[in-house]
Length: 484
Ligand SMILES: [Zn+2]
Image (cartoon, rainbow, N blue to C red; front, side, top):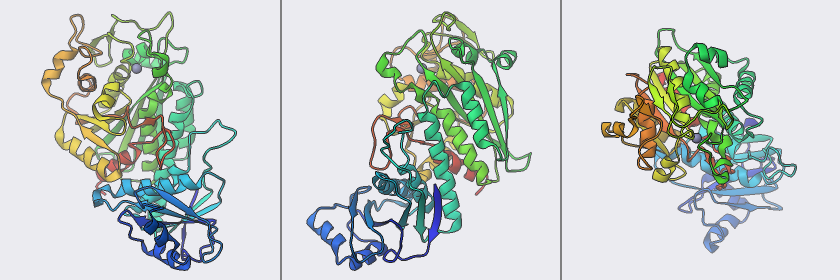
């Protein structure tokens, strides 16, 4: 998708469609006012008659035959929110506009919208017109060939486009069917896509994982004919002595639940169980493209959780790479096993701060709903930095407790710990307490993205399927980590 600047006025702009905005208090933005005058007051009329409410991210499309050069005018409502909501508001309004316009093929759409966060507006426009219909002959959404923006600087355009491409890449990886995207093909696809960027990659295949004592990753992957992989990506934008930010992603490319088999309806979406890994690769792509002055390493623990005569079993005891023994009480709690070894590898490489992203628990969705990620930490100062980045990047997140009393819930009579809590209660927290055992003293934040990373329905601004959530947050976090 091409992204460019336009210096035309909304009235004379020759793009196929133009986008103008009305604030949710029904106040026309300057460009909307200009178009309204040129069209004889039709926008005001729609507002006064109640045909258009101007509620946030709602749209109305006009097809004027005279008055403006464009054949199509889309009016979008944009919320007048607090400055800290600027990224979310911009992304949603822009996404709602392009999603509506993407119902047919369009070559050029020009935005005359005063986005409170311009780069997020560009990102939202790119994401809104990109759907999950990769395999449909009859598309539902047609990505717009060229997006034009009035009043944005070159830097804002580049940042927005980089962000939009990263989010769309993450979404595409998550939306890919599980028999196409498995650990090895994930590695190959990521390496091919990142080729040419200053990112060093290292891959551990099954024999290397064995040599490195990554028994937890291997146990999860053992039931599959697709062997597990550990993918490491290193970007060094700062001095070698500068601290390293580690982004760790759960990459279970398909989760059948293993012998603790999921019911069919719970299994259908399980191609999305690698969303954490897709999120960190999307983020590091953008971080490298933007040449942020920061050292970042991404770690993707990749495995397919399947059923076979060799699957790992309930009652098995796994000696993790860190030496902690884990009794398996449920083979569907596999993500934390994969992450246990992955986090240990990252810590062993001397990283300074950790953030892991994982579609980890249904319990987190029970607690927070489908749109908000759960955040857990072993160090409040680091967590505050992550939460501030999430807010300013427009991702919803909420911190959950990590009191020591939860530790009891994962104790095992046989091994050091077990891989689930006691019964159903506090399941998102016991999963986080499990991970905490593998990060030592390194400041760490765990983000449970089980809810927001994948949706079975569309919103006004985003097609169903993968959302790309937390890609913007990781990029913002890296920006701040580098002192920008
Ligand atoms: Zn599972």
